Length: 316
Image 1 (cartoon, rainbow, N blue to C red):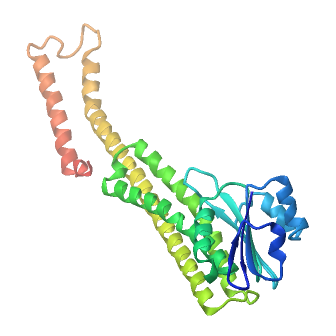
Image 2: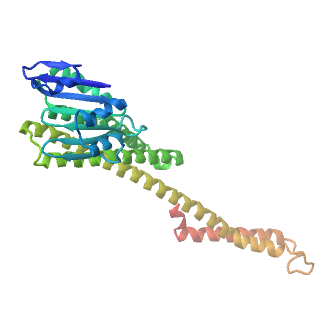
Image 3: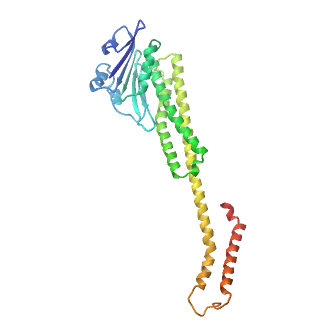
Protein backbone atom coordinates (compact mmCIF):
# COMPACT_ATOMS: atom_id res chain seq x y z
CA UNK A 1 0.00 0.00 0.00
CA UNK A 2 1.30 3.43 -0.98
CA UNK A 3 0.77 6.59 1.01
CA UNK A 4 1.70 9.78 -0.88
CA UNK A 5 2.10 13.28 0.51
CA UNK A 6 3.42 16.19 -1.56
CA UNK A 7 3.86 19.93 -1.23
CA UNK A 8 3.52 22.05 -4.34
CA UNK A 9 5.46 25.24 -4.93
CA UNK A 10 2.51 27.42 -3.96
CA UNK A 11 2.51 25.89 -0.44
CA UNK A 12 -0.47 23.56 -0.86
CA UNK A 13 -0.19 20.15 0.82
CA UNK A 14 -1.43 17.34 -1.41
CA UNK A 15 -2.37 13.88 -0.14
CA UNK A 16 -3.33 10.63 -1.86
CA UNK A 17 -2.43 11.90 -5.29
CA UNK A 18 -1.46 9.58 -8.17
CA UNK A 19 2.17 8.52 -8.02
CA UNK A 20 2.91 10.02 -11.43
CA UNK A 21 2.10 13.53 -10.16
CA UNK A 22 5.07 13.61 -7.75
CA UNK A 23 7.34 14.21 -10.76
CA UNK A 24 5.41 17.32 -11.87
CA UNK A 25 7.37 20.54 -12.08
CA UNK A 26 5.12 22.29 -9.55
CA UNK A 27 5.92 19.76 -6.77
CA UNK A 28 8.41 21.15 -4.22
CA UNK A 29 8.91 17.87 -2.40
CA UNK A 30 7.08 14.58 -1.84
CA UNK A 31 6.96 11.62 0.52
CA UNK A 32 6.00 8.15 -0.68
CA UNK A 33 5.56 5.47 1.98
CA UNK A 34 5.60 1.79 0.95
CA UNK A 35 3.64 0.04 3.72
CA UNK A 36 3.75 -3.77 3.33
CA UNK A 37 4.02 -3.36 -0.46
CA UNK A 38 2.86 -5.83 -3.08
CA UNK A 39 5.19 -7.24 -5.74
CA UNK A 40 3.99 -4.66 -8.25
CA UNK A 41 4.63 -1.85 -5.77
CA UNK A 42 8.09 -3.19 -4.98
CA UNK A 43 8.79 -3.15 -8.70
CA UNK A 44 8.26 0.63 -8.66
CA UNK A 45 11.52 1.10 -6.72
CA UNK A 46 13.47 0.15 -9.81
CA UNK A 47 11.12 1.24 -12.62
CA UNK A 48 9.67 4.52 -11.34
CA UNK A 49 12.22 5.73 -8.81
CA UNK A 50 15.20 4.00 -10.47
CA UNK A 51 16.98 3.23 -7.20
CA UNK A 52 20.11 1.10 -7.34
CA UNK A 53 19.43 -2.65 -7.37
CA UNK A 54 21.76 -3.26 -4.40
CA UNK A 55 19.83 -0.76 -2.28
CA UNK A 56 16.57 -2.42 -3.29
CA UNK A 57 18.06 -5.76 -2.29
CA UNK A 58 18.88 -4.30 1.14
CA UNK A 59 15.25 -3.23 1.46
CA UNK A 60 14.02 -6.74 0.84
CA UNK A 61 16.37 -8.45 3.31
CA UNK A 62 16.63 -8.01 7.06
CA UNK A 63 20.10 -6.64 7.64
CA UNK A 64 21.69 -7.58 10.94
CA UNK A 65 22.86 -4.01 11.51
CA UNK A 66 21.48 -0.61 10.56
CA UNK A 67 23.43 1.10 7.79
CA UNK A 68 23.72 4.38 5.94
CA UNK A 69 25.05 5.22 2.49
CA UNK A 70 25.57 8.89 1.65
CA UNK A 71 26.13 10.33 -1.82
CA UNK A 72 25.75 13.81 -3.29
CA UNK A 73 22.37 12.93 -4.75
CA UNK A 74 20.84 10.68 -2.11
CA UNK A 75 20.96 9.29 1.43
CA UNK A 76 20.01 5.66 1.97
CA UNK A 77 19.29 4.69 5.57
CA UNK A 78 18.36 1.31 7.04
CA UNK A 79 17.11 1.64 10.62
CA UNK A 80 15.92 -1.07 12.99
CA UNK A 81 12.66 -0.67 14.87
CA UNK A 82 11.82 -2.56 18.07
CA UNK A 83 8.13 -2.60 19.03
CA UNK A 84 8.66 -4.43 22.33
CA UNK A 85 11.47 -6.31 23.96
CA UNK A 86 10.05 -9.75 23.11
CA UNK A 87 9.57 -8.95 19.42
CA UNK A 88 12.10 -9.18 16.61
CA UNK A 89 13.65 -6.12 15.04
CA UNK A 90 11.82 -4.67 12.06
CA UNK A 91 13.42 -2.64 9.29
CA UNK A 92 12.53 0.83 8.08
CA UNK A 93 14.35 1.85 4.89
CA UNK A 94 14.59 5.47 3.77
CA UNK A 95 15.68 7.07 0.51
CA UNK A 96 16.22 10.80 1.02
CA UNK A 97 16.94 13.26 -1.77
CA UNK A 98 16.77 17.03 -2.10
CA UNK A 99 13.07 17.01 -2.94
CA UNK A 100 11.83 13.59 -1.87
CA UNK A 101 11.79 10.95 0.84
CA UNK A 102 10.74 7.37 0.14
CA UNK A 103 10.15 5.03 3.06
CA UNK A 104 9.88 1.27 2.63
CA UNK A 105 8.93 -1.33 5.26
CA UNK A 106 7.69 -4.91 4.93
CA UNK A 107 5.73 -4.78 8.19
CA UNK A 108 3.47 -2.21 9.79
CA UNK A 109 5.39 0.36 11.83
CA UNK A 110 3.23 2.46 14.15
CA UNK A 111 5.61 5.44 14.10
CA UNK A 112 4.86 6.06 10.42
CA UNK A 113 1.21 6.92 11.06
CA UNK A 114 2.20 9.32 13.83
CA UNK A 115 4.65 11.19 11.58
CA UNK A 116 2.16 11.22 8.69
CA UNK A 117 -0.37 12.95 10.96
CA UNK A 118 2.20 15.60 11.89
CA UNK A 119 3.12 16.20 8.26
CA UNK A 120 -0.52 16.47 7.21
CA UNK A 121 -1.13 19.12 9.87
CA UNK A 122 2.10 21.13 9.52
CA UNK A 123 3.61 19.83 6.31
CA UNK A 124 4.23 23.31 4.90
CA UNK A 125 6.97 23.79 7.50
CA UNK A 126 8.69 20.51 6.74
CA UNK A 127 10.93 18.98 4.10
CA UNK A 128 12.54 15.59 3.40
CA UNK A 129 15.25 16.07 6.07
CA UNK A 130 12.63 17.16 8.61
CA UNK A 131 10.58 14.01 7.93
CA UNK A 132 13.73 11.89 8.17
CA UNK A 133 14.49 13.52 11.52
CA UNK A 134 10.97 12.90 12.84
CA UNK A 135 11.05 9.24 11.82
CA UNK A 136 14.43 8.60 13.43
CA UNK A 137 13.41 10.56 16.52
CA UNK A 138 10.28 8.41 16.94
CA UNK A 139 12.34 5.23 16.57
CA UNK A 140 14.89 6.39 19.13
CA UNK A 141 12.21 7.58 21.55
CA UNK A 142 10.64 4.12 21.31
CA UNK A 143 13.67 2.67 23.09
CA UNK A 144 13.16 4.85 26.19
CA UNK A 145 10.28 2.92 27.83
CA UNK A 146 12.01 -0.40 27.12
CA UNK A 147 15.25 0.74 28.76
CA UNK A 148 13.48 2.39 31.69
CA UNK A 149 11.41 -0.72 32.39
CA UNK A 150 14.51 -2.91 32.59
CA UNK A 151 16.41 -0.30 34.59
CA UNK A 152 13.60 0.01 37.15
CA UNK A 153 13.30 -3.76 37.51
CA UNK A 154 17.03 -4.12 38.11
CA UNK A 155 16.89 -1.37 40.74
CA UNK A 156 14.05 -3.24 42.48
CA UNK A 157 16.03 -6.47 42.45
CA UNK A 158 19.12 -4.74 43.80
CA UNK A 159 17.19 -3.05 46.61
CA UNK A 160 15.52 -6.34 47.56
CA UNK A 161 18.84 -8.22 47.74
CA UNK A 162 18.15 -10.33 44.68
CA UNK A 163 21.43 -12.20 45.16
CA UNK A 164 19.94 -13.89 48.24
CA UNK A 165 16.59 -14.87 46.69
CA UNK A 166 17.54 -17.98 44.75
CA UNK A 167 17.93 -19.20 41.21
CA UNK A 168 14.50 -18.00 39.96
CA UNK A 169 15.47 -14.37 40.52
CA UNK A 170 18.81 -15.03 38.87
CA UNK A 171 17.03 -16.47 35.84
CA UNK A 172 15.19 -13.16 35.57
CA UNK A 173 18.47 -11.25 35.87
CA UNK A 174 19.96 -13.31 33.04
CA UNK A 175 16.86 -12.63 30.91
CA UNK A 176 17.11 -8.90 31.61
CA UNK A 177 20.78 -8.93 30.67
CA UNK A 178 19.89 -10.65 27.37
CA UNK A 179 17.26 -7.97 26.73
CA UNK A 180 19.87 -5.26 27.35
CA UNK A 181 22.21 -6.93 24.89
CA UNK A 182 19.39 -6.93 22.34
CA UNK A 183 18.82 -3.20 22.88
CA UNK A 184 22.54 -2.54 22.61
CA UNK A 185 22.66 -4.28 19.20
CA UNK A 186 20.12 -1.76 17.94
CA UNK A 187 21.37 1.40 19.64
CA UNK A 188 25.12 1.23 19.10
CA UNK A 189 25.02 0.97 15.27
CA UNK A 190 22.34 3.67 15.14
CA UNK A 191 24.56 6.01 17.14
CA UNK A 192 27.44 5.39 14.74
CA UNK A 193 25.16 6.06 11.77
CA UNK A 194 23.92 9.41 13.09
CA UNK A 195 27.51 10.40 13.87
CA UNK A 196 28.58 9.55 10.31
CA UNK A 197 25.61 11.54 9.01
CA UNK A 198 26.54 14.60 11.08
CA UNK A 199 30.22 14.65 10.07
CA UNK A 200 29.62 13.86 6.39
CA UNK A 201 30.47 16.68 4.00
CA UNK A 202 28.13 15.27 1.37
CA UNK A 203 25.01 16.15 3.35
CA UNK A 204 23.65 19.62 2.73
CA UNK A 205 21.66 20.86 5.70
CA UNK A 206 21.07 24.05 7.60
CA UNK A 207 22.51 24.70 11.03
CA UNK A 208 19.02 24.30 12.45
CA UNK A 209 18.70 20.82 10.88
CA UNK A 210 22.10 19.90 12.29
CA UNK A 211 20.95 20.86 15.79
CA UNK A 212 17.92 18.57 15.48
CA UNK A 213 20.01 15.60 14.37
CA UNK A 214 22.61 16.36 17.02
CA UNK A 215 19.81 16.15 19.58
CA UNK A 216 19.05 12.63 18.33
CA UNK A 217 22.73 11.74 18.63
CA UNK A 218 22.83 13.02 22.22
CA UNK A 219 19.73 10.97 22.99
CA UNK A 220 21.36 7.85 21.55
CA UNK A 221 24.51 8.46 23.60
CA UNK A 222 22.40 8.78 26.73
CA UNK A 223 20.47 5.61 25.95
CA UNK A 224 23.58 3.55 25.26
CA UNK A 225 25.08 4.77 28.54
CA UNK A 226 21.89 3.73 30.35
CA UNK A 227 22.06 0.30 28.73
CA UNK A 228 25.72 -0.12 29.69
CA UNK A 229 25.00 0.99 33.27
CA UNK A 230 22.12 -1.49 33.49
CA UNK A 231 24.31 -4.27 32.11
CA UNK A 232 26.92 -3.53 34.75
CA UNK A 233 24.23 -3.59 37.45
CA UNK A 234 22.94 -6.94 36.17
CA UNK A 235 26.50 -8.29 36.18
CA UNK A 236 26.99 -7.02 39.76
CA UNK A 237 23.79 -8.75 40.90
CA UNK A 238 24.90 -11.95 39.20
CA UNK A 239 28.37 -11.80 40.73
CA UNK A 240 26.91 -11.04 44.17
CA UNK A 241 24.67 -14.07 43.81
CA UNK A 242 27.60 -16.29 42.88
CA UNK A 243 29.69 -14.90 45.75
CA UNK A 244 26.81 -15.38 48.20
CA UNK A 245 26.28 -18.95 46.99
CA UNK A 246 29.99 -19.69 47.28
CA UNK A 247 30.07 -18.23 50.81
CA UNK A 248 27.00 -20.24 51.81
CA UNK A 249 28.47 -23.43 50.33
CA UNK A 250 31.72 -22.85 52.20
CA UNK A 251 29.80 -22.42 55.45
CA UNK A 252 27.93 -25.66 54.87
CA UNK A 253 31.13 -27.53 54.06
CA UNK A 254 32.86 -26.05 57.12
CA UNK A 255 29.96 -27.07 59.37
CA UNK A 256 30.06 -30.63 58.03
CA UNK A 257 33.84 -30.68 58.38
CA UNK A 258 33.67 -29.61 62.04
CA UNK A 259 31.00 -32.21 62.80
CA UNK A 260 32.96 -34.93 61.00
CA UNK A 261 36.19 -33.96 62.78
CA UNK A 262 34.50 -34.12 66.19
CA UNK A 263 32.91 -37.46 65.51
CA UNK A 264 36.09 -39.02 64.08
CA UNK A 265 37.76 -39.84 67.48
CA UNK A 266 34.36 -40.70 68.97
CA UNK A 267 33.73 -43.16 66.18
CA UNK A 268 37.19 -44.64 66.74
CA UNK A 269 36.45 -45.21 70.44
CA UNK A 270 33.02 -46.71 69.74
CA UNK A 271 34.52 -48.93 67.06
CA UNK A 272 37.33 -50.04 69.33
CA UNK A 273 35.03 -51.08 72.15
CA UNK A 274 32.48 -52.48 69.78
CA UNK A 275 34.77 -55.36 68.77
CA UNK A 276 33.33 -58.73 69.80
CA UNK A 277 36.28 -60.21 71.66
CA UNK A 278 35.96 -61.75 75.12
CA UNK A 279 39.43 -60.95 76.50
CA UNK A 280 39.59 -57.18 76.06
CA UNK A 281 41.00 -54.62 78.55
CA UNK A 282 38.39 -52.95 80.74
CA UNK A 283 35.62 -55.06 79.28
CA UNK A 284 34.41 -56.09 82.73
CA UNK A 285 34.98 -52.70 84.40
CA UNK A 286 31.93 -51.80 86.50
CA UNK A 287 31.74 -48.15 85.49
CA UNK A 288 33.48 -48.55 82.12
CA UNK A 289 30.42 -47.45 80.10
CA UNK A 290 30.11 -44.15 81.98
CA UNK A 291 33.86 -43.58 81.90
CA UNK A 292 33.93 -43.98 78.11
CA UNK A 293 30.97 -41.62 77.74
CA UNK A 294 32.77 -39.07 79.91
CA UNK A 295 35.95 -39.44 77.84
CA UNK A 296 33.99 -39.03 74.60
CA UNK A 297 32.18 -35.96 75.95
CA UNK A 298 35.49 -34.48 77.12
CA UNK A 299 37.09 -35.05 73.72
CA UNK A 300 34.15 -33.41 71.90
CA UNK A 301 34.13 -30.45 74.31
CA UNK A 302 37.89 -30.07 74.07
CA UNK A 303 37.81 -30.06 70.27
CA UNK A 304 35.02 -27.47 70.23
CA UNK A 305 37.04 -25.28 72.61
CA UNK A 306 40.14 -25.68 70.40
CA UNK A 307 38.22 -24.75 67.25
CA UNK A 308 36.76 -21.68 68.95
CA UNK A 309 40.21 -20.62 70.17
CA UNK A 310 41.52 -20.89 66.60
CA UNK A 311 38.66 -18.65 65.40
CA UNK A 312 37.03 -21.22 63.15
CA UNK A 313 33.52 -20.31 64.31
CA UNK A 314 34.09 -16.64 63.39
CA UNK A 315 33.91 -17.66 59.71
CA UNK A 316 30.29 -18.76 59.93
